Image 1 (spheres, protein in one colour):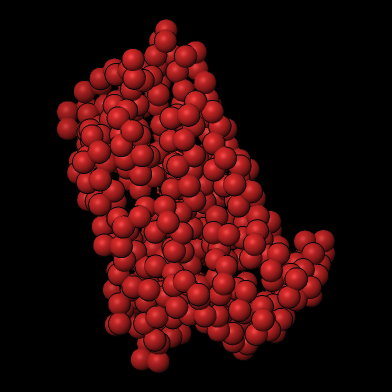
Image 2: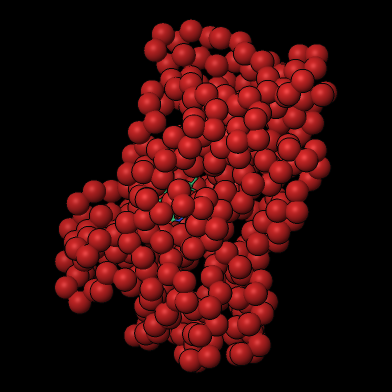
Length: 376
Ligand SMILES: Cc1cc2nc3c(=O)[nH]c(=O)nc-3n(C[C@H](O)[C@H](O)[C@H](O)COP(=O)(O)OP(=O)(O)OC[C@H]3O[C@@H](n4cnc5c(N)ncnc54)[C@H](O)[C@@H]3O)c2cc1C
């Protein structure tokens, strides 16, 4: 008999996992706490890897293509041109498309149901959900439970995983400055304001999102307001939420009796901490979980994803210690051949990217090592 699958969380990672499993004929149900599948708008930038993973689906959700990056640090400036453009995506549209695909593949979506906890019951798992409409508690059961319920996953908590550290991302929709080409993303490194960076990503010829990652409580919103004021940019809308930081590989599979519990997406902490991007890595984790369920063994995708996330963690460790002078030095070391490599490989193939860049400019490796060993 086919094992039945329950996914908690109707968003990017949950719906993608649902499609992969339902397409293979497995019975899949998705429980989503929101009353309908109408996520709030959020502009995301992702590498072309997303098209390799989702096929034609994401094409309809692409609102812009980024061909160049302009980097700024302490009066220095560098441009990197991409071989394959990055895609700017409207997340709410992507989630709706993924939901439609999951349903067309045979998955059932149940909205307005809030997952509370699970417990083993013989060969199956029992889990409690409350109905948002009348607060009624219902006990359900399943063979396989997948937590795709985001940064504060209750499935992960119920499975005994520790709380993940999170950071708040803020971005404001703004009118683009007159001198800004709509195929270019700008990035500013100002470690005094944030250990991450500011970004301005055009989402149309006239508008873009300007944002930063709030590494310290309260500092993020304040820094963003100041940065906008200094550039005479008016925030037309704010998009903000907390995203987990990958600090170590969570046990994303638990066997409980004859049942299984898996985690995907933000619930599993599958976020690249160098840039705090979680869409592509969330899809890769979903692919790994689907393969593990379908083939009954650990997926190669997990090993590759783990290495990728660890490399981003190493890069983040280095950058967290960077001073303004280090960023200036970094930009000075971006010779034409290094820039060529940075345009050839993307941030979802970090191993190849680092090897290539260090081969072309070993002083970049020294800069990173010095930062790791000595710090600011
Ligand atoms: C402002 C901002 C900008 C970002 N920019 C980028 C970017 O440019 N590129 C990129 O790759 N990433 C970006 N990210 C991160 C990216 O958006 C997330 O990593 C990704 O959307 C996570 O998807 P997910 O499906 O794992 O989780 P989520 O989208 O968080 O979905 C979790 C779902 O579970 C549901 N849920 C939660 N609890 C329960 C429960 N108890 N019962 C039932 N349902 C539940 C929620 O309602 C939600 O629908 C950004 C994040 C923010 C906040």
